[in-house]
Length: 399
Image (tube, rainbow, N blue to C red; front, side):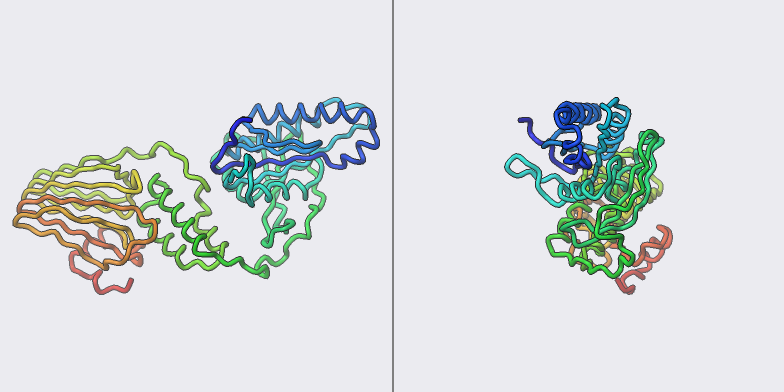
């Protein structure tokens, strides 16, 4: 048996609505009808890169690497079923449920809440419907061009069996599919979501969130400043809903991707002043050479090339200033001959899982300053921060 895919996957469940009634009605013809249904489902799944996990009787369980592929496979399967010339009286109606989450494999099979949530979504639907969780919908935003003609109907929040918190469910609509709007087979729509007791977060939940934020920062999805702000929220979060909100705009898995910006590996300053701010990419190894000049490098919104990056600067009759947000771990060292290497701001303990910046400054007749910028200064421009830090104002501001 081929090894099961791992990572964050989209799980798809399907089954035939009213299969017992159909069996009694068709009798000997039920076997061929079921076999044809299985063929059409397998063809749709295989055409979009699906992995068939299990099939029992009239039900299917498949996994997909990308939510888009799971959606396209579900649409293709429903269209094939509707267009197929079934025997008279063999009105075969299939319901489908999709959910995206982490794949945990034990004893050669998937386990975990993500699998159960996808199965429960399928169970509450009606024949001809495709139901999708809010998590999957959020991940489809970047694939809008590939899903042309496909719409979503918000069915509101519903309780699923064995789940305490209500979930928001969407129905997928597309040309050639049924648009049944019958009430779902749930315990009812949640009229007052705020009245549902919030599930408290554990230390392990917070640690997993912060570890994910670190990986997203290393891939350039978050800047150092954004990382610091979100980790601060994660450390004070008391419920799972609060943790979910922190990474709502981030994909649940971290896959390697090409950086969107060219890395700035070398900074050269000769008889001049240089200022680098905004979103720029700091690779794993970078260098600076300052000769009779000044360099101001704002790392608050820098995209790190890894979870640990090294920055080395050589100075002769020059000055260099590095600006980092509080809570980011900085290893600041080097050698200064007839010069200064200074650190300013609150030296607070690094946030759990914070990226590590190793800064090494080697100077002759030069000055290097590391400025730890308070998180309360998020709204300040770089010019305002430089003017304030050069006056020492940040030492007096509250965190």
